[in-house]
Image 1 (tube, rainbow, N blue to C red):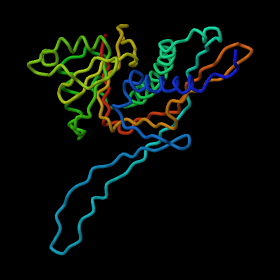
Image 2 (image 1 turned 90 degrees about the vertical axis):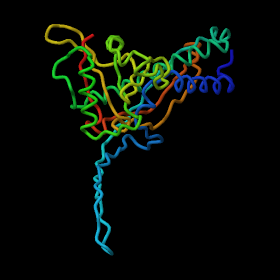
Image 3 (image 1 turned 135 degrees about the horizontal axis):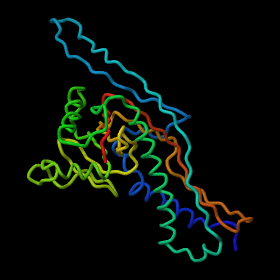
Length: 276
């Protein structure tokens, strides 16, 4: 048995991992602000303030808006997802088996990306629920009103994350579930149920923060946010390394990435504690 895996296997395996991550890995990467090729252990995202248009006198100086730029630091960390392939098993590996192992690594890294983003969103102090409550139309309109009051752009990049129980609550709202009010198609997110309503892209997702209220009733923390309010920094996108370990008579497949997430604008991320 050779002690090095052939280059073709390595190249195809890494291609499978990257493809799987892009297609079925992270569900939220495309719903936030992304900065790639970050050098170093941290980077900054800028909060761009609002400007005010003014008049000027004839031949006078054009007024300057003096828009504020507030830097938000985002710290990166390295993450790994490894797997052993025994040398005898390797002889039996076909294309489908290779893809299955690649997808397992991509899923693990994708869940980590989403976990980083959800953790960052959870630091927002903008909320419409003092105590956990059922997800109702009234609560949703409160969140919708808060977005508008905070001058968050209604430009197609508003998103909402809810758990499975909250999705069922949404289906009980006629305006959300009926084709007379809303189309059946939301943004494409692999492995997720989606729908667009009130100009918000609703996504059902697992992994939201959980807790119990004073009566021990379980709840999920849901989010309504704008794409530019949350940042994902990428130092190194997914990379795969395959090495032979003679003492194990196996190849070790290591999938790795360097990423970090941060809350850029708390006014653009609204939290809702919703009972299950």
